[in-house]
Length: 394
Image 1 (tube, rainbow, N blue to C red):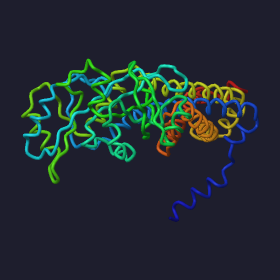
Image 2: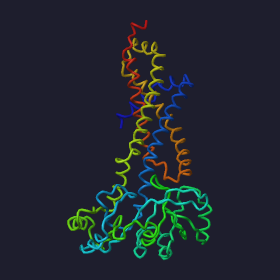
Image 3: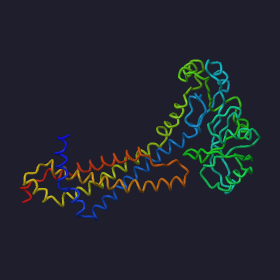
Image 4: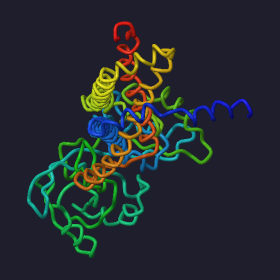
């Protein structure tokens, strides 16, 4: 403890040359802070959109009431699941530990907005209403309703102008709409939210789903939801099912099904790459901006630095001044950057219904990237300083 007191006392007494140099030219400092804040906003927005991509496209997966999921080996993601024979569900029921095996149907459909009459894309989900497939109280309270012909439930968090429609449904009045050129009744609401794949979700029974999509073969399903007996080990049952069922199905745990969706968007589409590239571009922009500021500052004060060298100060001390400036800029630029990002997150969330929220982890990640960004800029800017020779200056 005593050993720390002396260095801390020296630090307290040290003249803050880095801050004094920055604050001497306030115009230049404000430009630097604005540039760093801009770079931070770029990184915040790209990371936010990336997280919203994964979250929005897996919200429905998270609500599934299932232990294991059967999908086709060629399935790509939730809206491109392909199909496999329904009899695989009956075969799965023969495996010890399996309680039930129910079909799940998912497809993107053209939906005509009841208010604007414009067509958009919604995800239609069909399941057996006698076996609740989702941990959504509002859906489970309306299971008897979706057993009626051509009756669906509507996602109130869908992207679009639906205020009037939602108000009518919430008031107990069924609304007629059009899906795939077929008139349906919307008799209830639930909340999941829009995603990058679809503007919203319609839920209905498996029989209504087959009415909406007559080309869907009733002998095939898009996915199978496997619920296990109490006490059964999902991993053990999964291995048994893999060995027992033909190779035209894959057996995933619920978490693997969620990861399957995330991997598709991260690795098999351009969107994941674009967001990562956006973060890298924001980082590079920040490095360039801070380097220009620090390099100009070093050039303008080269005579003073040379004087310090002539007085016996080592390069380490002088480099510390530049790095001090870099760290100060990183903190000053981060604060407005995170503030602006809060506002942009809120604006984007209201406009798109995407789950775009600021998190402490993301703020910490950007802060760390910010410090690294400014440190790299400082390291590049100090090359001129190391080469400075007092004899050449005087």
